[in-house]
Image (cartoon, rainbow, N blue to C red):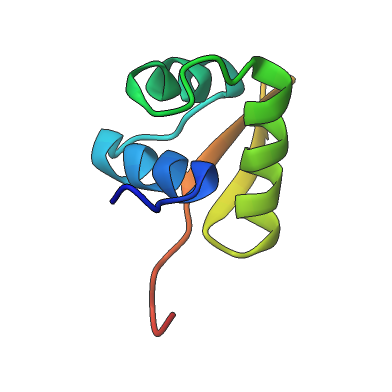
Length: 75
């Protein structure tokens, strides 16, 4: 796991959390990582990239964006 990327670590943390996350919650999940100083902007970029790659689905609820795990299927 030492060679894991920041985005891979974030995705694993979201999977372990098991519930939808906001940017703020995702940033909190990163505090125990190798990249504890990743700010909200970096985390937001990582969430968007994971959504673009099909790992997460972005949903706007009450003007707030949440990221849900995408169905894994045959990835």
